[in-house]
Image (cartoon, rainbow, N blue to C red; front, top):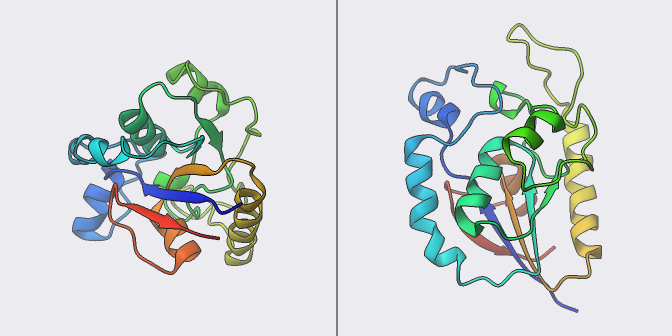
Length: 181
């Protein structure tokens, strides 16, 4: 059965706001939405409300969770680490499932491993950089996983670089694009 899959990039994060100005990693680990990001989510809410998803899959990074909650309220959501951002900056280093569960008690994080993001050798910033071959494997794993899902309408809230590599297209903050695996 054909699927309607909508990919939504998170709103601007505090990391994005500073990095876009000067290209320097501000060391905002698991960055949250910036004030502009919160406004982007509010502006996108009417368009998102036109989608009737059977499943909402959300990256386990905080900015994606905040975006999904801002767009879809208390709708049931599946938290996944499979479509997390490629780990190469501080903002892409996620928090432990217990910390996320404490902050977002209406969501379930018990399917996440601890740690759930790449945990290799760290660079001078304290950030492990995910090797490209592992990132490409995750892209393939995600495509297979979502293709096998039984739901007809799926929303995926995630990240710009992941979606760009998945689709070959750039994504603006809070942009919604249909995708077919």
